Length: 226
Length: 209
Image 1 (tube, rainbow over the protein chains, first blue to last red):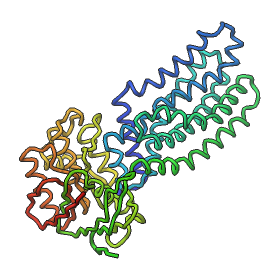
Image 2: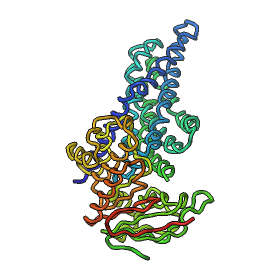
Image 3: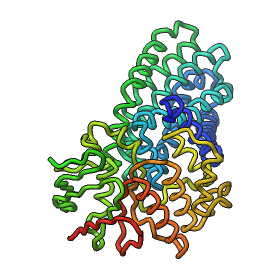
Image 4: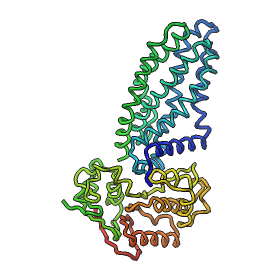
C-alpha cells in the first residue's frame, strides 16, 4: 500500500516535532533569546515610557527575526550530517514535500511559539493590549515568511562547515521588507490608525514566499545533496 | 542505447568531482536474480557509482535506465523502487530504533510497528527496538539499518559496504538476506572491497583507478 502525500507530510511533521521535543533545550533557546534581547532594551534605555513605546515595534521585530534565524541553521544540517536527509530524499515522495513538511515543522516550533510569547514581551515594552492582535497576526505571517526564506538559505549552506554566518547574510537582506511592514503594522496599531495597508503587504509577501520558496529551497537542497 | 526491460542499465557514465575524473565511462547491467558486486581499490568511485544509481548524483555524461526508462524523468517513481544503505547507517540518535524505521519506511508504504519489530527480529536487534539509536553500538546500528533495507520491500537493493562493523554472525546474516533477496527475483548492487561469500548468481564489476 503506497503512502499519499498528505500522509507523508504528517509523518515528517511528526518526525520533526518528536525530534524537537527530545531536545527541549534547543527548542527553548530561540525563545529565551527573544525574551532576553527584548527585555534588555527597556533596561538599557532611559526610563522614558514614550521613547520605549516608539521604539518597541522595531525592537520586537528585530529580536523576532534574529531569534528565528538561530534555529534555521539546523533545519537541514543535522539530517544531512547523519545521512537521514538522503534517506528522506529517497523516500519516493519527492524532495519538495520533505522540504515543505520540515519548514512547516520549523515554523511551528520557532515562529508559532514566538507568536505565543510575544504578548509577554509586549507588556515589558509597554505596548498597549489593544495592539496585541495586530502584533501577533503580523508576527505569525512574518515568521512564516522568514522560515521559508531561511529554508532557501539553509538549503544553500547545508554543505558548508561554517554556514550559519553565511545563512544570516543571505536571509537578513531578504527579510528587510518583513521588518519594514511588520514593524509598521505594529506601530500603527499602537497609534490606533488603520493597519490594513501594512498587513496586506505582509500577507502578500507571505503568500508570495510560501508559493515560490518551496521550489527554490528544493533546488538549493538538491544541489547540495549531490 | 543499452537498456534492460526488467532491470537497471548504466551506459557509459562519467562523473567529475571538481577536476577529478571519478567515473570514466562505467557501463553495467543489473538483472533480477543476479547480484552485482562492485569491487576495486579505495578511491576508484565505488560509492560514487552507487550514489549515481540512487539518482541523488547526476552523471555529467551517460545514462541510467530502470526498466527501460531514464531515471531522470521518473525520479520519484524510480526511487520508490530502491533501498539504499549508505556508508553511515543514517539513523537519528534521538529517535529509537523503531521510530527510525517508522519514519523512513513509513514514507514508502503503510507499515505497522509489529511488522517493523519483525524486521528488527530478523536482523537480531529486536531487543534494541525501544532504545535511542545513539546508545547502540556501531554493529547494532548497522543491523537496524539492515532491518530498514528489509522492511522497505524494494526490488532493488543498493548497499555500500554492508559488512562493515559486523561480527561473523552479522556478516553471515547479511549474506543470507542478500541470497534470499536475489533468489526471490530481486536485484542488488553491493559495494565491497573484499570477496563476497553469497551463494547466488554473482557478477563482479571491477573499478580501476
